[in-house]
Length: 231
Image (cartoon, rainbow, N blue to C red; front, top):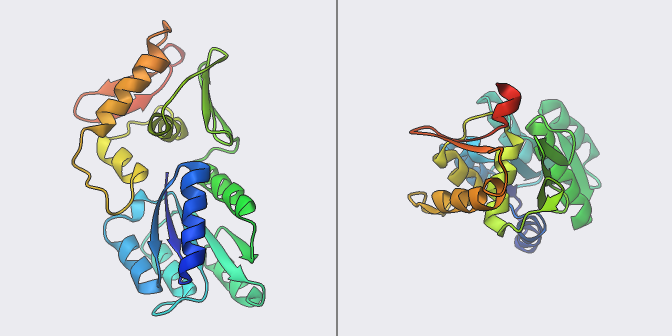
């Protein structure tokens, strides 16, 4: 998953980004002001974000302006507002403008992480923190995957690929989409790393079992589905 953190206080932005990277394995971009946030959201990258963490009081363009512009352009990415306690009226205005949730500063990073995960699940139509496809369970809170009751020994990036696919069961996900959601803005997207991770997942997730869950559609991408159930 990929998150945009819009926060002008450098230390807070760095702490939030670190919590998202280490606590959830998310890719994170940081925008220190409203104009930079608008650039990220308008530069062909908006569809790549699974969540936006948006501060209210920003230089150059305020949080409300950033949110309204994003929603007016058709952006559906969940938005979690970061607010000071004396900004209640502005928070209400932001929620009415399309924000999905808010946390008041100072906040606990654990709570922020839990709210971020919940909004990402909700944004992808998943209410439960446990994603299931056939006998596969992806437990997003503890970041582990189980099949047939057995824990799969996945590398961190293998888990991230699997979690993204599990959020979209039955949907064809292209290599480009995976790259955009797993890496930040500075990543060079022309790489064969996705093929490497898919190969590792097949070896660990599918080879020991008769029912295969990861399928390749030539020229289109990958899909996680139980073909026996859909037959």
